[in-house]
Length: 190
Image 1 (cartoon, rainbow, N blue to C red):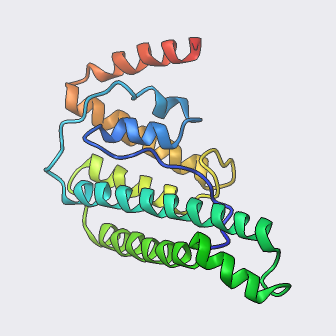
Image 2: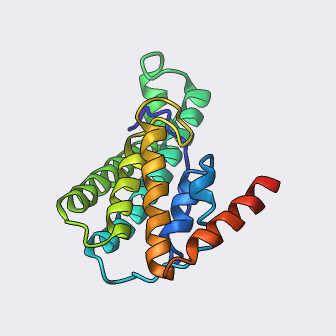
């Protein structure tokens, strides 16, 4: 990932809800955005959801380390040019700004994110929210951009939106459909 063009940042995962986090990750999907205000009441019931939260933290760390490495690489090129043009100057500048250390930090973060992702894939979801969390991780990890219109990304975002709607309806005994419709109207006015 040292030469990655991926510069998307992921919002921090706290005790906020999955619905809001997914909305933040896929801001161009109005049906998902409509669930922004919904409450989530599954916190520690589904192990897949718990591992998803760990994956989100690992993903955030990976993105931060990638951005740091890319910034230092850009700075290093500005300072001395390509490593093949001035290998000694490159080494000295690298030591001064910590570029190689940043590359290693990024590699460790990528390994951790991959390991936690594997744990997530291997953990059966026990709820709609757990399954949705796993889908969200898959999209966040592999889709080329949050608003990609290439097949199958819009379709998968649609499935996530459907799952969140179903979960909201189940959680609220059916009143969520009215809430989603009202929220969608408000969302489209903005």
